Length: 334
Image 1 (spheres, one colour):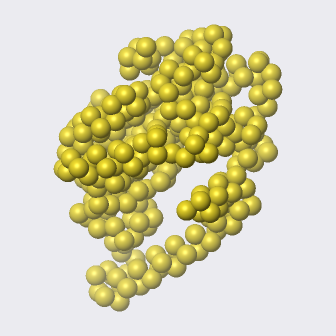
Image 2 (cartoon, rainbow, N blue to C red; image 1 turned 90 degrees about the horizontal axis):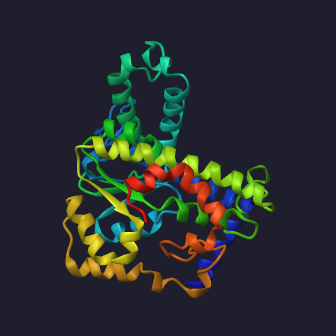
Image 3 (cartoon, rainbow, N blue to C red; image 1 turned 90 degrees about the vertical axis):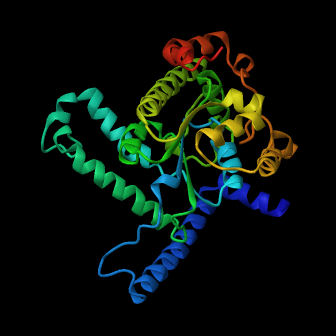
């Protein structure tokens, strides 16, 4: 187990190893997918270019949030509680959400054009197309899934596209996972600094020089605006969504994990055995994480709501608060 952990860590930190892994995994998956399609066509269940549709949108559980909000933890516990699979960061929320939001913000007149690909006059058509796209690509990523099984969709950074996705999939189950923007900013800063767990995996052009306080303050403004775009859209989708849903705060998940997860399952209409729930909570608890895997610069950093008060200077904290104040109030963060 220790050797496997070291291999995973090496792959995460090395762009060369990561590229090799993804290429090998891609080739393996494509061969597996073609074999399943060939079997379906030969068996007579599919004709021509017809594609299978075995992903049940009602059994999709979407986790929308920013990065560094506890989505890996939540996903792992949910995955222990249901029979299904995980769609790990498909980025479909960003794919459609960032494009649509940018035009809605900067060129709102485009939305009224018939020829604009995501225009209001053709909204019904492209919403149906978006639904088809999501369900087909979800199946292509998980060809063994069946309609009665769940698909947990972990979408950190995808909340910007949540309004479009939930409109296209109104029967899906939705989690809006909110973390204090100051803790979010502190965690990202720690991850991308030199020596941080994200730093080694970034290409040189993506690395940021945070050696000066001025550069840190500038980056905090970028992160704060990103948080506002993401979580504002996430809240908009949550308010409009008619299917099973829950607004979940990371702070509550840390304070009372068992009770909060019990509430999550009830809100999402997920039947769960109490003993199985307790086992999942214990298995994925902070205490179960190896001490070698915890600490500054690591993926498992500190898991302490309010830790930003130690991590950020007063000026850095004010920068984040000035930009995210409406959402700090909206989500009732102290």
